[in-house]
Image (tube, rainbow, N blue to C red; front, side, top):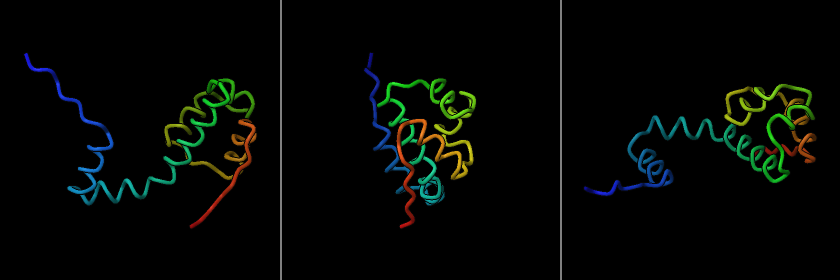
Length: 96
């Protein structure tokens, strides 16, 4: 019996970028949302907080934090600032 071969997401993603222009374009367009989500998840985990604990600090529901972290919620600057404060962080915005 052959052992299944594993391939990293990084390698698969690069292959898709090279072979599928539509995928590459979509990935580029979604990059800001996923970067915000990645930073929020990292900050929350560094603080040892659950989504529920963060939601309580922000004054929202856990399901909203979950959607934010999945990149499935359009964020206002105001809400993003509240989440940053709930994480004990300051919001910095950059257009570059």
